[in-house]
Amino acid sequence: MINLIQRIDQPIVGADVVEYNASQDVSNLTALVAAKLVKEIAGMMLKTHGAG
Image 1 (tube, helix red, strand yellow):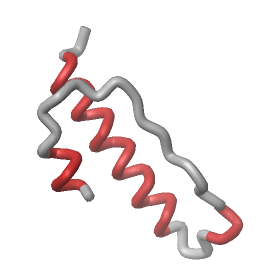
Image 2 (image 1 turned 60 degrees about the vertical axis):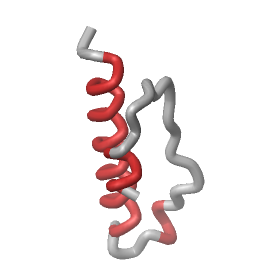
Image 3 (image 1 turned 135 degrees about the horizontal axis):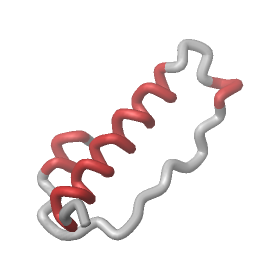
């Protein structure tokens, strides 16, 4: 998934994390993966749109 995100060459205008249920994420692994994906997408938004 991260490789796919990093190959995006078009501007990203929005993203969303859906259906995260903390009570079902006993080891917090899903939270860590979601945070990593959000970080990667935010980085690609900066890369494709610029910082300002």
